[in-house]
Image (cartoon, rainbow, N blue to C red; front, top):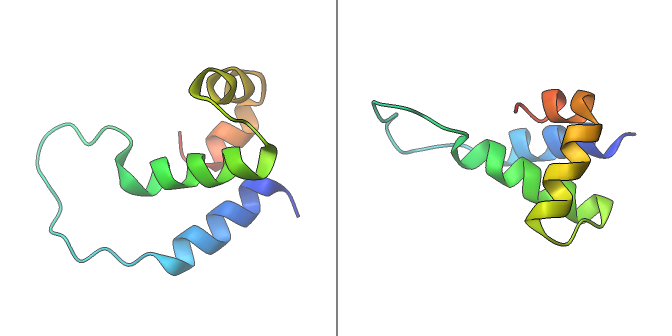
Length: 67
């Protein structure tokens, strides 16, 4: 199973938000940020620059993660 699919499966199943939805620009939000952090850990990407470069090269993974 691809790393981004594993992240979406487990993160989506494990998180249930109890906070009310805020108005305004949502940006990426906690769910997407958590997906990216777990994906980066699985892929061995250790800093923000490497994560960004990796996701630029692998746009399919970025879409799957919800970016």
